[in-house]
Length: 398
Image 1 (tube, rainbow, N blue to C red):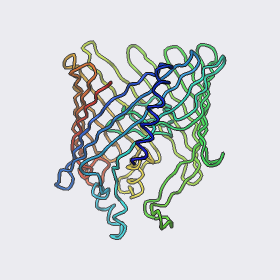
Image 2: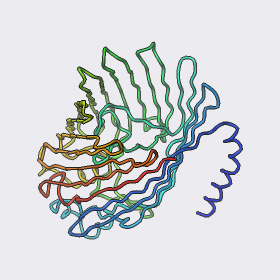
Image 3: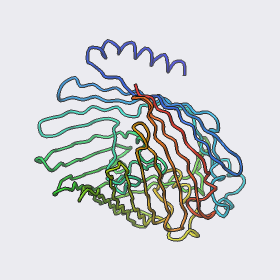
Image 4: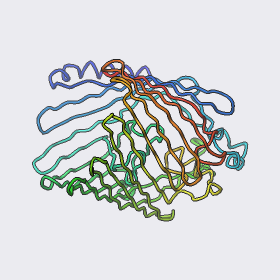
């Protein structure tokens, strides 16, 4: 660790004159966050601090460099035993000797989140490096995005970067063709994407095709690596054809997104999102979004340990088949917005309620606070075992 920090400091001292000469903009934020949850009659707490430093430079009109470095520390309850949050009929299948493996660990991290160069040539833009890849128009769910899975309690939080080579080719003023290649060990295992963007009247549309290796795990079996034990990985090829649209009609925002998935082993399935939003003259904003995932189950009695674990590990976007998301926000004053969101599992009748507040007492300071309440049967998606609690986040930009 000492050697790592020494190298970082040396690199910074060496780079400083170059930063000044090439006009590198340095900005970012510090974020302090508290999470609490009532689990099995015990209130547990996790506290984290995050420093994000962003670098951006334009050595010329045709070149842009960007990078983000994150350093995160965790305090309090840093080991969360996942089985404590799952229905009893699910956890009884886990033998006692295997229970220590079902632990979510929050370890201090420092990493390069993004680092890329974008070259703007005459007929195309080329972006190389670790970069944002976030296709789709959905708010809480994105059927065409196989690179990220959003947190339903906080769907607008920033997504991680992904290593890739990307080409954007403008085709007139209304159309763009995008291709992307994310290398893995072999060409077959690597990710490929092609997307065509256009516009008709008041609506943008995207047509997309993706090939990606989907790294499922079987959370009932363990690998044979005695030096690094863990759950058995079951990768398989995933191919997607999809589309998304977004636009406005008579002041009403409308969007949709669809992706059909062909799998090597798993049955083919599709995901669909349909959403709309509206802002009243008073400033009140309302939004609703419907989501269907036919990989999800139609009956809560069919939920398995693998369903729960893959959902919590963000390997799949849903356990149940049909969901509804709704959000209401109102500016209570210039520096404060009050809101209320709800996530309803239509399949099993369970509900998550999130009253929230956003407060900005100063120009560069943001405070977010919400309470999450789960209302559902013990074996439903949103059940009390998941832990009713709250989050408070303070972020200061610099």
